[in-house]
Image (cartoon, rainbow, N blue to C red):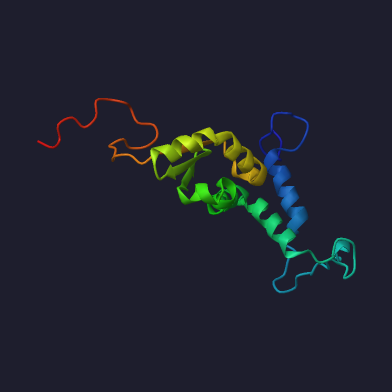
Length: 173
């Protein structure tokens, strides 16, 4: 066996632990020759990109900075969804918006509550036009379909993925 320690299996070179030790010795220096308080300071060379009037140093507009920040942080989709909910009057029209309002966006489905069953039916007929406006104005929102709800009696159904059954049965006895 050699004095360098256990081999890495190749048989030709120094072991892994020896190579790590040699690398540390190269980076940090030899511990026996080091004296406390007499460190050599490394002189850093200035980076070429930090020139005062160099390329790419032009000021940017606030809209460019905000767009870059929202896309970098992943805020584009949530912001587009909230903008969509706030701009319902422009999407559906003033008369239609008086009788309907968006509730929520869940799993790329926009849910809209209507004042009456007639308005819900009318908006279902206008679904293609509304989806086209949403796709053109708010492509980052990721809306795939719109669901129009008519006013209805309270339901005991919890969530969008509940199991159909007979219901609450005789709970008013």
